[in-house]
Length: 414
Ligand code: CAP
Ligand code: MG
Image 1: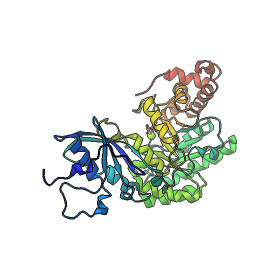
Image 2: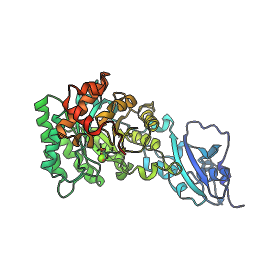
Image 3: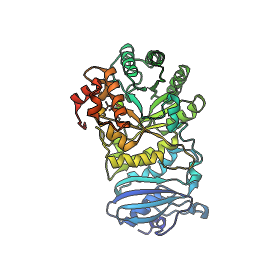
Image 4: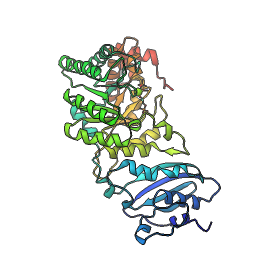
């Protein structure tokens, strides 16, 4: 129509230089792919539905360009000046904002974002990443974590007891569940105090360094208060549900942890709302990449074998995002979690290698002999896999491992 200019944002064959490039999967509704591509580039940069009476030359230079259309895939390049330095919310308001709500697009999925170093250089990235190993003195094996289960409901005393049994059984990090924060029956301060006492007690008894992935998810100022309490105890980790809290809170938290050397464990609860549909939403690849920019140290990436969606190939793709060179950003320590138990450990190590945090909740606390035995069964399974010993053979000298194998066999939970 005469008043439209969407196709002015299409320049097939254009070669981006030092720009942000986004790859979208789009399903147009009654328009051509070229018009669809133009809408995406226009609405996510400087355009709108109609030509304008005023459009200075220097603003034309900020127009995004749809430069490749292959089937349903569209590549769009964005001049860097469209984006504020170190501002993830604004980036998402641009490339994951209005375009997802346009009537002319039946569906849209942001599959990938590529950042030039000139954009990355403003981000702190992970403070520690894989170097969290140094906090625990663990260099030659995966780090283990467990979440007390039932995931919510214990009071602080009961929780501390499960924590003690898990840590003394060999778990390195005690992790709060994603929906455990400060409920009436287990207020944050009391849980923190009890668990930190347990951490100190187990460190004394075992001579091993332990840590608490304490969930501080809350309103931003409250997270800051909780972070300070964690730092006062000398704990070197916090956990945040990064998507329910939002990237703004995450970036604030990253700034706050700069001084007290606290590692950030990122839980991705709620990602399934927009990552699971293959034709609409935002890919976990993009979410994981943004989490690395924001500066998380640990990031859940699925298991490839457990109860959460995500194939081995999907997990391997996310491992690349955690580990590939991205400007000056440190690597992220991946977390394998969701439906794991001792029998699945060899396959997990085959996928992840040793630089991984293996989180096992039900697979520890569902052990027939309780949490301490469950923890030992997990450590024995790791030891077995790290030394190339078949699990059943190792189980001949580990009652705990044998009983875990008896209960769960080699089931891949759904
Ligand atoms: C795992 C878990 C984690 C999921 C999150 C849970 O417990 O604590 O939150 O792994 O999914 O609540 O289900 P289990 P993801 O070990 O008992 O399964 O890691 O895919 O983000
Ligand atoms: Mg959980």
